[in-house]
Length: 277
Image (cartoon, rainbow, N blue to C red; front, side):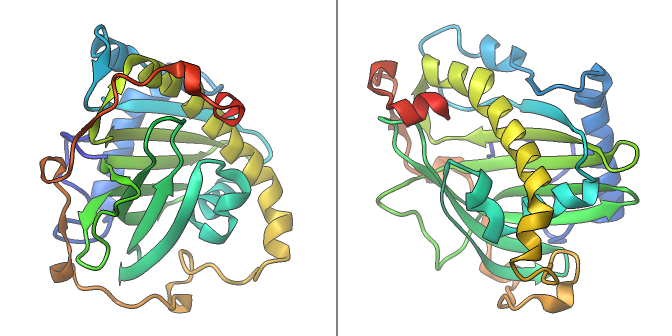
């Protein structure tokens, strides 16, 4: 997810490694300018930039995608927990292959690994990202971008993609409800067929947001049965992750990774599960 910058601010956490209140407020302002002003409460994706770059049959770098969904009966703090809890991820994320935390940089910043199942016959992608988070009163913000870690180099069975910058903004919306905003810019490290871009913009992102909403409804009951007091993203003293030094990391530049051409792949080979994704 890296090919420019989603926000007109430097990558959050570099070199400071964590979201400060100032940068978080700045990022939230950008959200409100780009997404919150639409006034809609249903899942949606702004595909104007995507479409302007896909008049041909290929697309090399994803432009900014933005989505929002109104989450009735899900408090902001619950959705915040859902997005952090890697133990719960496979309960709602049908695209995840593997996800885990690698190490902690500060009380509100860590590095993690995520591999993603792409629609066949595309090759699956994976990411190593620095994630940072911060409560903002009744709202919450989570940001990430790709980094390089010497112990987690690109793997032969995945295409290492790049998060230029991705973020969630969770805004409280009255008692026991919230609105989730999602912005992302990803370099998939490949030339993708036009049908992939259209599919992601029109179907995958909105459905993913609905899955997060449904996951939020079910999370309290699940958490009651799975270590209910353990929330290191809220209580950093609970973290058992090894400490990382910023010196161990570097920004992941897309041009240093393999670039593959998948423009010749057709939608005809999609499996049933891919169509339902």
